[in-house]
Image (cartoon, rainbow, N blue to C red; front, side, top):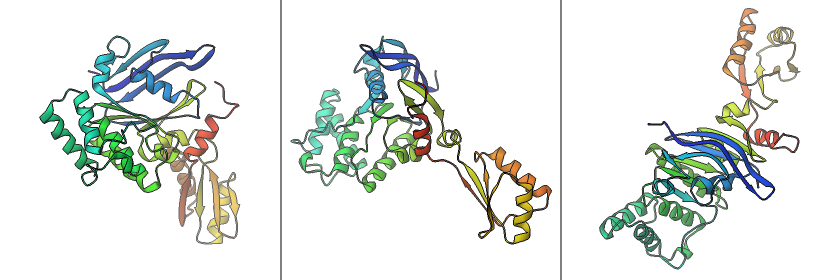
Length: 310
């Protein structure tokens, strides 16, 4: 049995002469949050649509929850849930009715459907609003209901395509906690987002898609170390220590007034250990140390710039 919820090899998709996905290879570990980043038009939503069987690929081998997307689409659909960029909630129905409708579509049966509806209303803090029309819900409530509808069938893999677009910061953070709880329950999340902080906060693994190609993959910290600009700031208690360190670390930028040195570094453990070892060999004591690495905004801009190869 594979440890990967999603396995992609050589995924290709084109519309006429426009190539959207150009031989993408990707694996998503089961029970984790994976985030796909990329500029508008990079192919993120197309990949979600292909993996969720909404459209077909032009080529490649695709496995979702252990099932072949091309040969076993029904098995894939039974194992997944999809929450798109735009809410699928019916505003004329109440929250409870939306959930029961989904239960009926999934043929859960009357008793099981009512039980699952009640469970999800509690889980998503929608009990008080359960019998109000969904059109009267706030944006955050509608997104919670939308995700609850996705969960009616207890999917093992959930595709969230920009699920917090348009939400205020409080509602976005509430959605983040719901996503984390789903993963604690063993669900795999495939997340696309335009909010880089969201990927930084949530994702175990991130991939950056640009012009149909994955141009980088790794944890948030690993991706940040790909971009130059990181440094370690060292502060010293006195002029003697500051000057001694400045002589030892000849590439450091000096701030005499603050008695600090800014040393170029990728922020990794090995680089930091080597830096401290150099100071220790010269018996130089550091009063304070701070590590600054590029954030995901820096990574995104660097990897998706026009000059980056497709």
